[in-house]
Length: 603
Image (tube, rainbow, N blue to C red; front, top):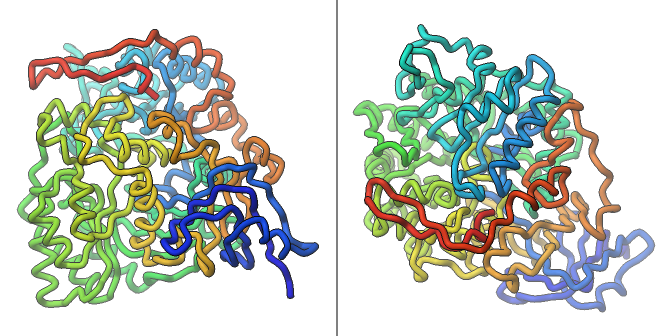
């Protein structure tokens, strides 16, 4: 009898299987877990078995981001200068200046989300003068959360924005006293101005998009991700923008399992979008590496309640119920699972009114549906979600903008945003994620840190101890919990015989390191379907390096999420090591200071 394809031994395996929570060795065959045990498993090896010594490291089921824009992120990754994890603004601007020198016309330098001013030692955003000084000739576009974009003079010229350019609905182009655009684009509160402006920039050609997607997926593998649920996105058109990911899947070259949702693209044409798509594809179409998952996160544009905490909560238009009802009725009739972006409880109340009305006419009867985000959902609405059989996918968006929420709404409201423990107490399915790449970083360890510590990336304590999760609880949400959202319970998020052989061997023991060090964890060995897809440190020889194209790509010089061994690390050490001190920020709406805690939390 043929032996296992792969045996990893001498590890500390957290299986998340209640029947056998710990093991030291795992045997994998034909892409699935064959057995768990101790060193005796090595005796089952034969001549074709790959044997890997885990060197006593912690091993976990592969992480699964239940809400990430992975397909869109892959198409653009090689064009983007990532400030994710960069510890100082001085370093960020030096990276920007260097990349501007390397970027040929007509390309732009783009910093597209994944950062917050509170991660920087300086505790501030860049100024427009600093952008123009760093890049006088190359267009620069910097996206900050859902609230603003900063563009330099060269980018204003490339965009064609001048004195006569009108402000779009829901957005504002800041102007000087003479009426000329300054370079600040503001969502008030609709982010479409930001995204429409970004979409005007050059794109990569198809071959470079393939290379870009490969690099983004490997970057996610480096951080221990083995699965993701793609939430679609604006300007991510089906089927055209799915060509790269489908070709990689067809060639058997996906190192990450992806379940994708279809996101409507045409305001006032949403029902037409879904009416066409239900004739083109169906939920479950595909395989364990790439499969269609349903509709959303945008079902109708009138239901979009962007979480711009610089602005008051948006009031959704009165036409929302009619438009949302038409789409949800179609999805219920066709038995399409669906998801819906929902930030505020006031919006959620209206959404649930629609869902309950549709359910009375066309019973959901087990149809899988869920809200994304749900930061301010109340207990009453949680009970309504449970009654309708829904779930909630939560993300660490508050880790990137909790300071702004705190300033606007105060401590009492901030203390349960979102109320994860209440969700869990009601046995509502909960999955964890990031909402990367345009808001939060794609680094899952920042999300795990947020759930465990209750802190933002900048170190601000948001939640009382009672609302923190244990490390095991948080890990379960990022593994088992997320599997519900693609209907793959029992296959993913657990290491047990018969489950998919997806796992990560960690750089540090998640269960033992100091809390603040959780943010620095990555994988040194990632396995998907029994195949090694990423190797770092002593395992780096197990996976060949990827070339980067185009040759000016920021990825070739800086990689993705900032780490100390990139070419700018000497600057990071120089700029990001302020003395140990405690910092306060002024909360203007509350007219008082808020303690941020130690600067060592800035990461």
